[in-house]
Amino acid sequence: MPPSGRTLPQESLNAFVLESEMHMIYLDNSATTKPCKEAVAAIQSALTEGWANPSALYQFGIDAARQLRQARNQVAIALGAEQDRVFFTSGGTEADNWALLGTAKRFGKKNKHIITTAIEHHAILHCVKELEAQGYEVTYLQPDASGKITLDCLKEALRKDTFLVSIMMVNNETGAVMPIGQMAKLTHKLCPDAVFHTDAVQGFLKIPFQAKTLGADLISISSHKIHGPKGAGALYINPRLKSFPPLLVGGGQENGYRSGTEATPAIMGFGAACSACYATFKEDIFREKELIQHLCDRLEAVDGIVVNGIHEAPHILNLSVPGVPTQNSINILQDAGICVSAGSACAKGHRSHTLTAMNLPPQVMDSSFRVSICRDTTREELDQLVEVIVKDILPRAR
Image (cartoon, rainbow, N blue to C red):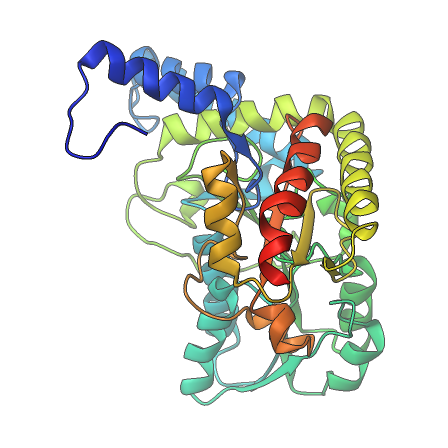
């Protein structure tokens, strides 16, 4: 770091920034990912060449509309969805809000019961709390010790007046994977009119699924979790839902579901990222699984390190060094040029609600942090992580 109180010349500052970036080991990919070169190129093209309004009726606008259709098709292919059932949003949070609040609006006060889980992202939990305040009754399914929500747990909670079930596909803190296909099938069998939503932000292009065959009525995804830009996401609306309340009204964009001029640079980047990641999807998840297993093997061989949860997803691992507070570990790793997270990047300063729901010991929860990798992560980077944990963090627990 430059000495305190001194200002570096611009050339030296540029060199310092470049050196810092070159040595950074980024292991917080569940918070956000580095945009891939394909996404960056698509965004630049949309900003400098195809910047017309897609609703305009002259050729420049018609070309922009064609590029928008292409991006929608790219997302639909990666999602395994019908192209006309993918509706762009500003991200996963907006898609989650639209799914839950829109479903409640669709049913009105006819039914009153909602099922979700205690380990959802706060984009879901805060929506559900809002609905609860309006008089809806909510059942929060609890995870088992591994962090999973079981099919039996859902079955016991379903009631005749259940109209909405929202269960995340992959937990963003532990990597536990829920049996969404079976859960959707069970919900529709016992409650035929109920809507099943899954927040697939951490599952999209991380675990195999096809929207058309998954069985979920609504699926939320996000661009910046798959090497696309921030500011873009999508909600998949199953053809089974013949009518669904629009999120925004106005000019009729997104087939009338979400009015407002489309954020074409972000959407084009999203589409390009989908195509790039989908092309290497099988190879990437196989490699990431091997990397996470390698990391687990090394950590589990060291006394004093606890791996939390089942970590079925190929890119997430939650661990603790009991006796060393989370923030201390994050600071030590940061000083070594390694970026990890305390858990959800959207819930700073609080004990993890996911680990709390799993009933982990307080000393484990208060020392936990999340490692999340991507297709660019290397074995050498994970080995360096282990080296810093063993050399600089573990001694503080003794």
